[in-house]
Image 1 (tube, one colour):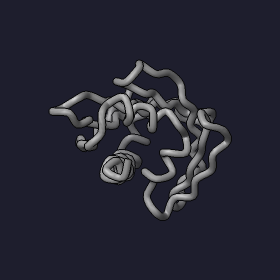
Image 2: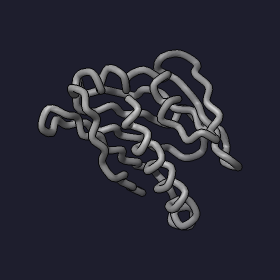
Image 3: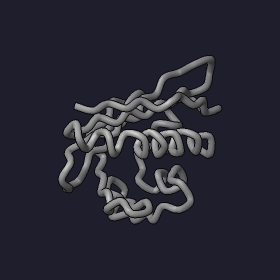
Image 4: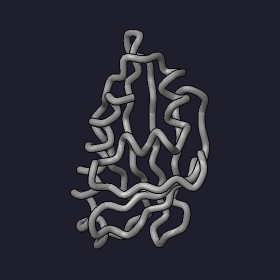
Length: 129
């Protein structure tokens, strides 16, 4: 199992508001790097493509009200989840992304750096919420 944690970001909104925004697929389009192509199937399914990577379809897998949203691979060769963890810090919301995937060791060496950069790009855009 491969786990990558992003840094954290603070959003100047209550946790409930941030959670509600992050349970909508359309919100993730604003978090994506500019060069990403993004497609929404419905409010719980979306896909994106970055550079030479294959299209990555995601679905809203499960939610723990106001504290966690889990996005899961919706097909594809590598089963993985992206956890969006929220917690209140002095009337603001702290957000952290955690990637957990069933990635073999050889593949880990190839994808760790780009995945880490991708998570950091997403977390830096969380300020836009």
